[in-house]
Length: 514
Ligand code: HXC
Image 1: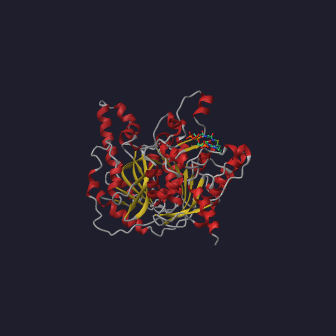
Image 2: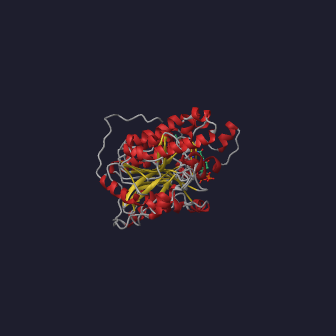
Image 3: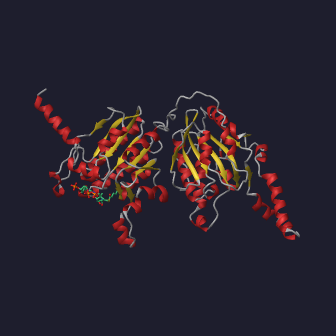
């Protein structure tokens, strides 16, 4: 080939590789942000990334745009391997028009989304963008809608992961919101529908970008994000870790690690539950002792901490864990915990990840705040999500399983495959004190010593009902087990459910109470 032709190609590629130029790259680094290409290099196995559309340029001539042409048009797209598995990636390049979304930029992203869907591989979006390309007007808005539409078509078919590694504002936040997981980088990313200036104009509130929509805000207050990263490299590490638990698509099983069975009893599990049933304990200890060593990967760690959700492994099998946390609100279910739990259950069910529930729940949180914020509708989400899930499902009741929350937390009645209880389990309509106050009200009032009478009745009720044996007698509990053999039981039970097949009645789709 003529040498000159190769030189032209190489010159164009070199131009593309430096995006908006060295000065803008320096400015990106000064904000402690990596460039799109540096992020992809960290994410993909060495040499595996193949770029598509490197030479795409925008088609705008308004506002002098024809003078400003950058190859790639502000987004790097392609496919590569992450820990040996195929993924499709788009990474917005802030050095080109602030990563803003033009018509062609959107076309590149849509192309990658379609490839991911057709080839059954996860889609990973590294977002860092000033939003709609202002010079393009409605064409840019159309581009966003094209992306949203494809996000929805792909939902439940392939895992979709959104890392927010810079600004993400306006309607742009809705693509990440539709995807399965959002990761945010501390101090350098934010998400909001309307920024601080508009907020000030409309509501007269003074608020910083960080406070309005930074990583901390969305991890703790809104629950919009599922993971927080300290910096870009940490964010990429977390994406890789997350991928290690989930399959390529809804037709596949999650990855499984080799595991050789050894002594699977765990003596530590027998000393976690306090003697006094009203004392808290850390359910994360139960989780850590039960799962394969260091395999728990918590999701939404800082939001609605009264419920714990996350991925883990048991004898190498990937599972999703949902657990009440007695350390926070005594483990009560509330609006936020129900939403958090329901969303996680549905993700696992979409992608064939079996579910393990650890239950210690005194009920739903009472109060006007909860009722007025629709604890009925939101609690029903969790109930619906469990009832609808067809993946293997196992529950271990460690202590309290009271009232409606007993039904909701993956009870036998809503389709759990195995229900185990520890001898410390209390399965009843409510706690002994509340129950005695209601059903022995007259006797207590008529008594010469109401305090003693209440105590006696409470003891009688507790002895009768605050145990797992009534439920076991009815077959609602399959087995009451010594806590130390919990892991052994779970390994066997999950293995027995390996080929579970359960189908929902034919329907277009259900109508979860959103
Ligand atoms: C075109 C943009 C741009 C945009 C930034 N740039 N945003 N170009 N369209 N939306 C360009 C800047 O002109 C600049 O170009 C470069 O990107 C970097 O921007 P800076 O402002 O220098 O960077 P920084 O100080 O870090 O501020 C980043 C920013 C700010 C906070 C994102 O640029 C900003 O507020 N941009 C506008 C955001 C916005 O209003 N977007 C539209 C939202 S509405 P040079 O040449 O100097 O490097 C929307 C609707 C979506 O998105 C609806 C979907 C349904």
